[in-house]
Image (tube, rainbow, N blue to C red; front, side, top):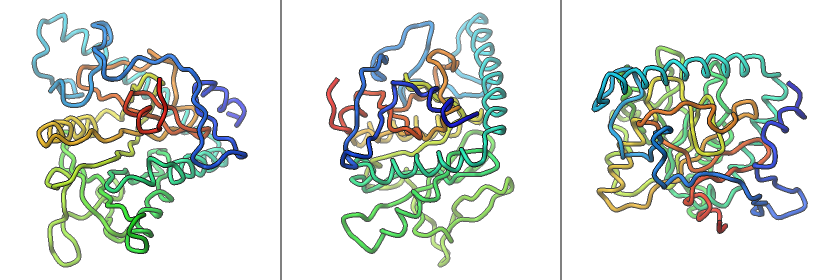
Length: 302
């Protein structure tokens, strides 16, 4: 796929960042999108984090009738089809184009006002074998500035998978050496630090998270995110949403990183009641705000 064709897939719905403008400037085209916080139609059961308590696997609770279970199983089958298609597309993506898009996406993130102003964030450790958007430059920016500049200092939490039941924790790290490879050769934080102390966990902190930087297989401009089928992020985000509500904290901004071929037409991604919508997408061409929270934090009115 050529770079030109990739750009066309994003189209006019993406915020283009002009080289002639200040780094903080963004263009906000008029895009048609369903507000994330409104009640979704019955035919498209999408929820915000913390509202429904089902899982993204085939075992669910409070499904209801046999017809409901059949419909849910149909959605799971549709998801598998979409995942297979996107995986093939990513696998065939030109390496030079992938590298260009990695650099462009990360530059947009680290130069953005919403990233620079956040104090505590959760971010994924990219895995090349999974064809995820690279986050190495973003993580380096966070960890290098941790002590050098108090104003730029950020507290970083990264994921650690606990089991095969969609349980994941976000643990604090202060350097890349805090990471170890798991059984799938994916880097994640060791549960204890070099001194044998347990790492601080997001769910046990006394201060709210400002920003989540999320991976995914596919996305659309209405906020739908298709993961890899384990349900880890959706489960964790629902749990954190409940914690934030209990503590009366401001909701964190949920921002996903996406290569051009990962952005699908609206309605293409099947959804279940447990899936969590994202607030914004970062693409190689710019930022796509989706929710009212994203527009608010980017300083733009509807």
